[in-house]
Each structure stands twice: as C-alpha cells, then as structure tokens.
Length: 305
Image 1 (cartoon, helix red, strand yellow):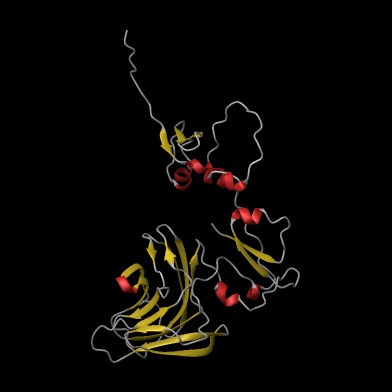
Image 2: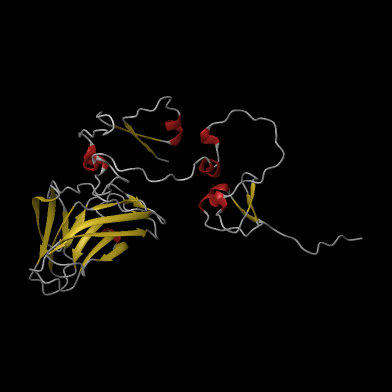
C-alpha cells in the first residue's frame, strides 16, 4: 500500500547571519530554522527572530571551552543585554564627547583648503559661532545656473545601503543676495554625478542662525574611493550663506551639540571629567577587546568589525 501524505509543511529557513539582519516577524507558533547551525526558534507574532529564544532540547554533555570568535552572529547578539536608561549629563558638557564621531574632517574650518564648484567666493569668519570659525560662501550676479558651492571633506570612504545617518548643521542664510533658485545639501559622488541624499535648505529663516537637523537612511551602497568630499552645499544659481560646526555621522539620534572628528582629537588632551586624567584611544576587534585582561578606565575603546 502506497503511503499518502495529505499535507506537508516546510518551515522558514535562512542562515543565522541572515536571520540576524531579517525584519521578518514569525507568526505565533511558526518555526524558523537556521540552515547553518540547525537551531530553531518559535515565533510569538511580535518579536523578530533575533529576539526570540531557541527551542531547547534535552540537556547535553558539557562541551569544550570555546572562544567568542567561534560564536555565530546570532549567538553574539544574544549576549547583549537590554538597553539601559539614559544616564545623567556630565559635569562639564563642553569637554564631553557625545554620540558618534563626526565624519566631517575640518568641521572647525581652520583652513580655506576647500574644494569649490561654480566659482563662489569663500572666506573664514574667525570665532563666529560658539567660539568656532564659520565658513562664508557667496555667489552673485549669475544669470544662469551655476551649481556654485563647497565640497567639504570627510573621513568616510564608503556609505552602505541601510546605513543610518544623522545631520546637525548650524546655518545662516543672508538676504543680501537673492536665493533665486535654491540652496541645497547633497551627499554626492561627483565623478559619476550620483546623489545619495538631497536636502532643500531654501526655506530656512534669513539673517539668523538656524540649526537644521535630520535623520535619514542610505538606500544604496556607494564607494567614494578617494572622493571623500561628498558633503556638498551649493546654490543652483545665486545666494549667500555661512555654516559652522557641521556634523554628520552614523547613528539614530542627533546630538545636542557639535562633536569633533577623530582626526581632530590627535595631539589634543581630552580630560576624563570623573578623575581629571587624560583620555587615550584604542581601536580593535571584539576578540581583541575581550583579550585585554584589565580595561583602563581612562581609555576610549572603539570596537570595529
């Protein structure tokens, strides 16, 4: 007699790394399987796969001691605890470093060594905003489109699809030159005329400082190579503005104040306000970090992949 199977069910399957990045919400009672580890989880109709618990079988024999590096991406993620509450502000916020480092290299405008397009007039206004220099940019008298502006250098060579960025831009738009065709900010690779993000600044108030803030997500991966001047502020035709303390970085929350680029910190003493000691900077992988037997309270540890 031939056996008949009236219904066959195939569960959702992906590798552990694919599950880690997946936004799929498994239905209540639905099973998801990791193809590379054989592990499985049962959905609850609310949480993403990475936040669910594994299906537990019988307790097996104790395995050999492993290393953090040998864990799967999901196993590493499961070691992270819940996000804690926001701590209190430091005693001296002026010297604190909040959030991620600025991607803009010379956000203090210590030099006029800035790439321009469309032949605008630029100048540095010393100590013009919060004790920092401002960059003044002006284009006037043009009868046709000029795309005149400044291409500000960064330290980031690639932006990837899904990267979350935050922008904080103090800007002052003058009324002495008619902003006849608009003022824009673009994240752009100029050699291929590729704009990843465009922001219209034309409707901001005139003759006063305004802090423009925005959070956005990159939707396409672009390798800028040596074209790291992708922070592009420009007029379509004519206009006059100045900026100070421009900030753009990875993250989901806009900081309350300007933050420096890591390169700006070299050669400068940053003081730990808890104990008055100079801070040091360390960069390395997760495994290298966990291999450090004793962590220095006066060192900033930056863990990278």
